[in-house]
Image: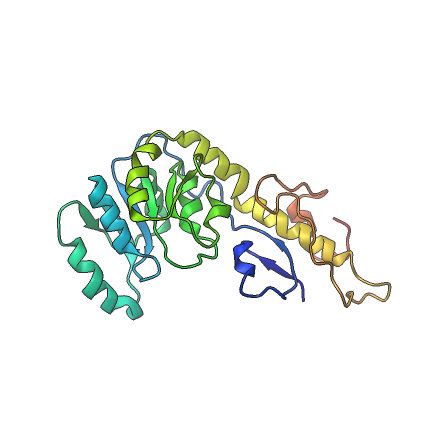
Length: 255
């Protein structure tokens, strides 16, 4: 069966799987409006869990002397971790725990931040928080692991580090990043339209691989080509998307 990975790093545990391409996630271009004003705090957005390392975020912000706002949910499985490991760190100056926020609140939360801290400690498969921040024009400070080097363009849309000390030292540099350039790279690489076009392009290639009797081929090429599969350029298709899914349309129709 041909498979699509959401990052190249996602393939590592399954080296023999038939991954035909990588298509990075995308979100609607108008979901979050960008803010090009300099932020006043660093942000942590996501889940309170050991692999997301909110403890790192707290120590980095305090070492840099910058306020930290945490917008995160606490799943039942992580309640003990939150109570025993994170609450004692929050109990002090410079850290505000907001709790879980909705999509509408995310734009304000990320747009008014200097940078979101993404100090994960596991092989992150993609990390939607990073592109949500870019959609707001906000650069990301992230730890180098998993798919993060595929998402962050170091020195343009964020900074990758390998330690808390590096993260603390990197924060002043992020203040100088061009937030309009951050948003522009989001628009070029991580919109929902780009993602959908890439999937349609791959589905079209698979449909064209049918044999003469209408069956799918029993073997597949190791890699199919998607224009912009790495998110760097857009995909061009011959018909607008709605026309591909009209009632009665044949799935074998050329793209």
